[in-house]
Length: 114
Image 1 (cartoon, rainbow, N blue to C red):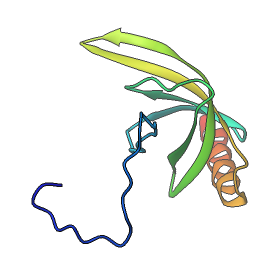
Image 2: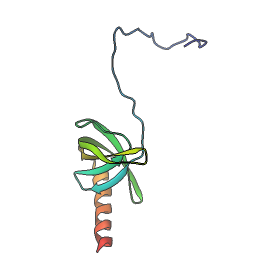
Image 3: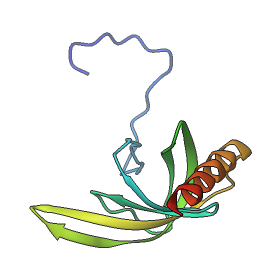
């Protein structure tokens, strides 16, 4: 970078051509449906089907991070200059703590809807 020190712990090597990657950025989403195997979420951006992501879920008093694969994603609403996307995700090997938090929330929701 211009004006920066040239001191580095490791040599940087120029990469010929284009190597691709992704930047992981937390964006807000709305949880619409939930089960032990997956969820339906809404976002302001499309998610690529078959892509894998980490999702931070606020499940009542517990926040968890779960890995999931996007099964389907499509436009669900257009209006007011905004587009909303609805995506179905499938959890990938959720740890017991995530399953426990989901189970607790599902039990609470079932108990309060009747």
